[in-house]
Each structure stands twice: as structure tokens, then as C-alpha cells.
Length: 108
Image 1 (cartoon, rainbow, N blue to C red):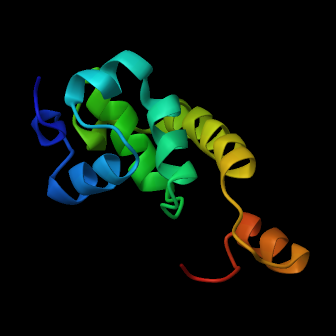
Image 2 (tube, rainbow, N blue to C red):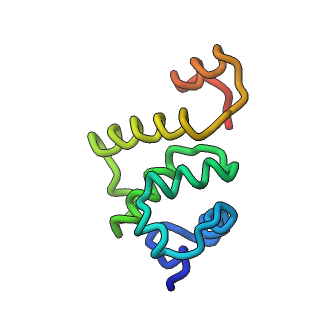
């Protein structure tokens, strides 16, 4: 069983977050896939962050995080937004939520 930090792009902070979410090994992440693993992070109370989401996707594929570009990155943003909507209660008002979606909302 390999430590989570053995996956490309994932370090000690990611490993700690996954451990809090009940995921203890790199193999568990690879088996469940990036979307399910990220959903577990959100369910455990981690704040959603798009960069962390696509970094995880690249890690599962064994690719550097900087490979995520263009159409691939845009498609991952759609998936991230859907996961965030299902698994994270940000506790913000509707107007704050709309402004955040436009990229001008609260800074987190």
C-alpha cells in the first residue's frame, strides 16, 4: 500500500486531507477515481478549490498538473462545479453565489 503522497502532484497537505476523509492510500484514490475521491474530501469538510480538483485528476493519470489546459481544463471545470454543487454547502447567499460563479465574488 503506497502513501498518497507517492502520487504525482500530491504532497503532505493533500495526504492529510485525504486521511481526514477516510482515504489512506494511493491505491484507494486510483481505484475510486478522482471525482469520487474529491467528493469524499468535500463531504469531509474540505473547501472546494478548482486547482486541487484538476491536480488530483492529473495525479490519477500520472501527469504533471501543468498538463491541464484548454478544452480538457474547461471540461474539468464543469465537473468540478457539479461536484461542488452536490457536495458542498458554502453557506453563502444567492447573490454571493452568483458573483462567485462569475469570478467576482468572495475570495476564499
